Amino acid sequence: MKKKKPIDTDTQDFLERIGKRMVALRKKKGYKNHEIFAYENKIPRAQYGRYEHGQDLQMSSFKKVLKGFGVTAKEFFSEGFE
Image (tube, rainbow, N blue to C red; front, side, top):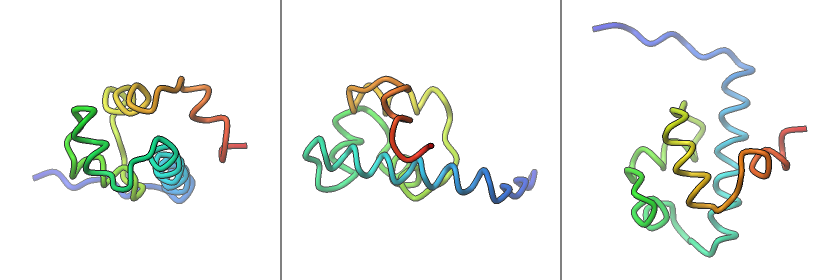
């Protein structure tokens, strides 16, 4: 089995900021927990939970997340990524 490369500090910080932004947008949409949001937007619940905790995500999944929040990538990155 292939070992995963460790993620560098800058990348990990970026992923954690993405996770925090996802939490903020989810709560703004009225979802108290990630599981209901993920279920309603056809994103595996455990996978989405990992994203909110700063784990790496695929762009195809990120596209689903943006659609669920009803925002563009530009709008998503407009806060917390200065």
